[in-house]
Image (cartoon, rainbow, N blue to C red; front, side, top):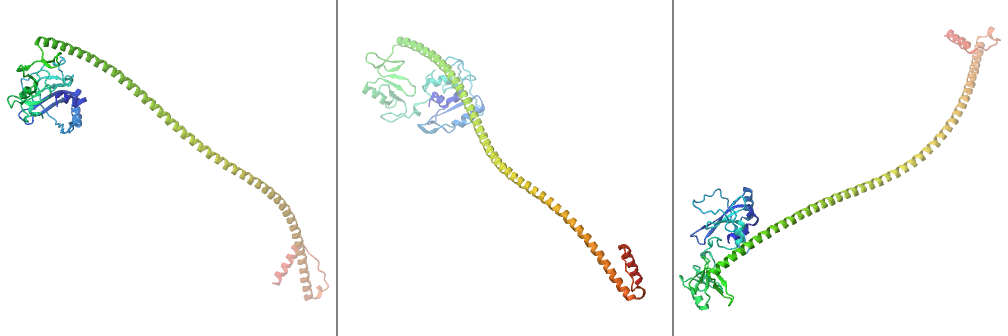
Amino acid sequence: MSVAHFCSFIGAYLSEVRAIQVLRREGVQPSVCMVLLSFAGQQQADSFHADFHGQPFSSLEPDILCRLVFVRSVEAPQGTTELPTCPVCLERLDEHISGIVTTVCNHRFHGECLKRWGDTSCPVCRYCMYSASTSTSRCSTCGTNANLWICLICGHVGCGRYKQGHASDHWKQSAHCYALELETQRVWDYAGDGYVHRLIQSKTDGKLVEAQMKEALVSSKLDAITLEYNYLLTTQLDSQRQYFEGLLSQQEAAARQQLASVQQKAEAEAAQRAAALATSKEAERRRQQMERKLSELSSAAAKAAEEREFLRSLNETLLANQKEFGAKLTAAQAAAADKDAQLQDLQEQVRDLMVFIEAQKTIQSAGGELQDATLLPMPAKEASSSSGRRRSSRK
């Protein structure tokens, strides 16, 4: 994995990284590379550790996992080379503005610039971070992995002349004169017996040929101008894209906000409608209950009216009976008074008769001067008093 691929791997966290330092341990088979990341804060470092620790770098190689550890401090050796500006965009390197990536060859770049580089070599010195020993390529003939060369025409991989010379043998057999050294990424011309500065495609036969220096210089300048123009155009297009994406994001945010407000209004109206429906149902239930109560009260009032009419007629009957019984009582009392008077009269007559009989007995028993006497009646009080006196005298 190159540095550009690593920058693509960390994705959205690249803007949170202040500095990236690539370290390589030499003399270890296979060679091991470590990357020091300096974040803007502890929270970003914790989030990065939680999201990427133990995750595979690629889905094609699930066994190769990303291992992350926290480092308290780093002591850098003295005398390191630092460039004041990025060699790609020529902007000042400031870790507080954008992330800085330091390669194994101690050259520093912006993270976004190196991410767009898309090559495993350094943009300044063309140093390749991965040697041939770390590659899985082998010589097609002897199988060695040291001093390998790849044919730029057909892709044949062979060892160099300091091994067994299978790459040179391939040139002699196929006349493919250009080969790339995998370790240094330099091109060798077997026909000219030297390294090639620049290769171009011939317009006559379509083969790869070495460009002349003057033409190469003019072409490199044109390429530099074209690259700069393309970079400016890309920058402008990117700024325009960001501008219109910002407008789109604003419109989307406004649309989402409007949609959220409409949804809230709809929910509020639905809640109000549900409340009104519940209120109407409650009112209907109360109305039915009141109608039932009204019918019950009406029936109770009818019953009460019937009872009142019955009680009124009963009262009139009782009053009439009372009057009748009063008249009868008066008549009975009058009759009783008459009977009492008659009874009293009869009692007086019986008393007088008893007195007369008693007197007759007394006279008969006495004889003498009282035998032809006449008994006169006396008033009740005097008779009772005289009889009482007589009883007392008898005693």
